Each structure stands twice: as structure tokens, then as C-alpha cells.
Amino acid sequence: MSGYEVNFDGLVGLTHHYAGLSFGNEASAQHQNSVSNPKLAAKQGLLKMKALADLGFQQGVLPPQQRPHLPMLRRLGFCGCGKTVLAQAMRQSPRLLSALSSASCMWAANAATVSPSADSADGKVHFTAANLSNKFHRAIEVEATSAVLRAMFSDERHFAHHEGLPQGAMFSDEGAANHNRLGGDYAKRSVQMFVYGRQEFDGEIAPTRYPARQTREASEAIARLHQLDQQHTVFVQQNPAVVDQGVFHNDVIAVSNQNVLFHHQQAFYQQQRALDEVRRKMAMLGSELIAIEVPTQRVSVADAVSSYLFNSQILTKTNGKMLIVVPEESRQHAGVWCYLNELVNSGGPIDEIKVFDLRESMRNGGGPACLRLRVALNEQELQAVNPRVMMNDRLFTRLNEWIDRYYRDRLTQDDLADGMLLREGREALDSLTVILRLGAIYPFQQ
Image 1 (cartoon, rainbow, N blue to C red):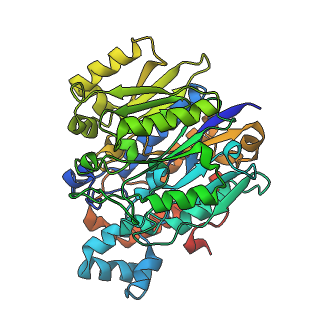
Image 2 (cartoon, rainbow, N blue to C red):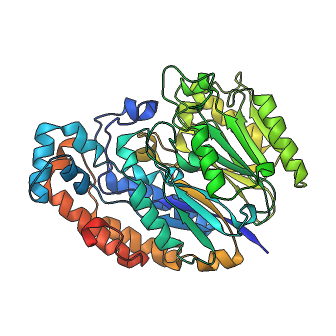
């Protein structure tokens, strides 16, 4: 049966702003308090989705979550109507209001970990929404993420959904940003590679400057929930030295597609040993690993972080060759751009580059790979996905009109207390659930 990799990109929310909330993400910290443009951010992401759909790739949309998060503000002691709650929060704790207004769910790579049916013992596609417990402003996403995924992948014959792992340090889970799948056809069994930053039990090494967000214990729990075969599952540790240089997720230093792993020379702890294990397990399935390792002398870790070279998408074209999708920042960096052009002219599997301007997302620390959740599906499973979330000409036009109607082109942290912004957000999301046919997924609709 044919297989597809479907990318579901997060649609940027109306409260997109630069708050510097993500310690360890250097781009986020550098642009704290800058003026944002939510309308431009949403349209930049939408243009990427449409361009890839026009190239023949399967592309879907993930809706933003409700922000500001009034239920949590009330839980934390702010009282009254919505406008009063926002005013109190701005007066007493503006940083808290900023955190609870974050549009961070736009980075859909953190939405969940997904295991295709070919890898799961029960033959279903498994979803576990990430608990994102390392950052408060992201930990509040998990329930809404689960509701969205259940609305999009609702057919119980094909899809299995799991609650997020328990909150807390031991089971800190950052979703698909630390997960790779390596093999051949998307619909055939492959090796699942979980990348973790630290180990709560018996961990010997860990970063010292920035937090390691993914634990081995979380990755192992997801592998059990998804009924994965241990013979085809690998757990690999991030290199703690690069975490301390701003590599907060694996997808900042490595990206995979089918049998290709594109990674930096310093990506993993005991890298050769880790790659040998992946190679051995892939060979058991009749697949050969193609590891494209970028030397430090060509691209330093600092340059990889600033250009987001590895926070890219690698997509398989109809001719079997692969396309790499990178942000404009990679083209603007002379050394990185030189390397990429040598790569596509080397005769290897990647023979084309496509560049997108994602400045608004990049300034908050998220590139092309951050914006999308990869879901490998067979033909029957693809037909079972809510069709209204799949990108096409009609949806592109409707979402552009929706953005033009509701989004602001300028937003600062002070604007977060504006009661009109709260009203605009509710009206926008209410309209969006109709466009995408998602039902009443937001708290204010229930």
C-alpha cells in the first residue's frame, strides 16, 4: 500500500509576540520585547504550506490555541470578566500574562509524537500529545493539542490517541522535535529514533548551561504506549555540549527523511556508536542508512543555530530525489549557503533547495521544521483524515481572507491586556472551527 508523509503546519495565532520566554533558545532571547506582526507571521507560514501543496506534497493545517489562556489566569487567582482579568494580570504580573498569551503552539513539531501504523503492534497510527513540561507557557498546550488531534484524526479504526505524559521533570516530553523515523517507504516498518537530552535515572552526563528538555524516560514511555518493537527502536542522547550552545531540540542539529539522516558532526553523544546502532537496525529491515554529516569546519554549531540549517524539511519528490526546505537565514549566511549548494550538486539524494521567508517565526526561534508535525499515513489512513484541514486552493483563499479580517499587523506585550484583542481572538477561532470543521474544541465554545 502506498505511503505518504503528511506535514501539518501550525497556523500562527493572533497573539504572536516576542516575549523571550524560551530559555535555551537564543533567537527567542535576542528578540525579546521587539514589535511583532501577527498578520505577516500567519501569512508567511500559510505561503509555505500552499507552496509545498502546489509541489504535490500532502499538506495540512493545525489551528492555533485559545490565547490569552483565561482559564489558567483564573486558576492563578485573577478574577472578574475577561477584560478585568487581563487588566489585573498586566498590572500585577505582566510576564505571566505574556506567557499565557504565547502563540507557541504554532511550532507543531512540539505538538505530539506520532508513530505510523506500520511500526505499531496494533496496526494503528498512534499520537501522544507532548506535555512540554520544561516551559510553563508550553505546558498549558497539551489538553488543547489532544482535542485538536482527536478532531482531525477521529476514526478509531485507524488512529489511537494517548494522554500527555505526567507533568514533571522525569517525563519531560517535547514531541516530534526530538524524534526521527528512518527507513524506506513511509507505509513500511521503519526504525524509530528517539533523541533525549538527559536521563533522570542513572544519567551520567547532561548540559550545564541550558536545560535538556527531553528525557529518556519520556521517550521510553511513548515507545511503550505506541506499541513499538524494541528491535526497531533506538534511543540516542543529544550531545550536551551543543545543547549548551543553543541546540534546545534535536531538530536544531539534525533532520531525517526516509533513509537519510542530515546531521551535524557534533549532534549526538558518542555519535559513531549511535549511528552504528541505527544502521544495524535499519539493515534488519532491508534499508541502508545514508548519513550526511556536516563537518564543524564547514558549519560551526553557532552558525547552524543562527541559520537554522538543520531546522529544515527534507521531502521526497516523485522522481525519488529529495528537496530540502530552509529558511531565508540559511541563504543569507554565506558559509551555509555555499555548503548547501555543494550538497545539492554532489550527486547525493538531496538535489534541490527551496527557501522560505519565515522571519516572524525565526525571530522567536522556530524554523521550517518547528512549524510542522510529520504524520506518515497509508492511503486508507489519509482518506480518514478530516479533509477540511488539508491545504488546497480553496482553503488557502479562505484562510487568507480569515487572516485579513482578524489579525493585527503590529503587537507589543502591552497590547495583551486589550480586551478587544481577546474578543477578536474568540471571534477568529470560532470562525476557524467552522472553516476547518473541527467542532467545539476551545474552552470558550463549551
